[in-house]
Length: 113
Length: 115
Image (cartoon, one colour):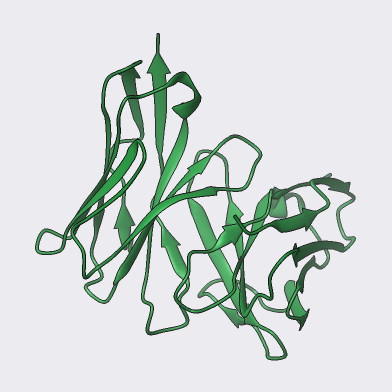
């Protein structure tokens, strides 16, 4: 049972435009959400997070939106740059528990010139 | 950000031997460390959670006798793959948190190939 789902395995966006990566979750106990970026043969790098008490968090070109009623979050990257090409993982955890992080299957983002 | 160092980055071993992977938090004390495994083109699958000084909590389906985890200090956790077989070949990644309410920082991963 996948608790965190990323239904788009890949996404291609033109440089300079907005990249929108989507994520859905099923566990209503999740109260902390994270996005990680991963290059091949490297560990994931933390990008941005959001607590369930918020619906938006912004950090530079990256903004994460959370819709708790829909159990949906998204990562917006604007403007998209060539260096953004990577696999992006959505992740979720319950802060009140052991705080283990559950990952989605990832979305491969390709930024085309 | 915080640094987590994982060693080795690549290892090739013969079937039946054991391999140890180290995960160190370099500039913080990690209250909790996690071990993940990633198969090609798949997500990171949590294998186990370890807290310093206590036994690791393994996820369902992960053999605790095969994947030995030791979290001896607040800066070091080790994963030992015992009696490795070709199907254990994978990318193993550790992560560490320094408090309950923070994001996890990841090591660079270890590519294990069992021949």
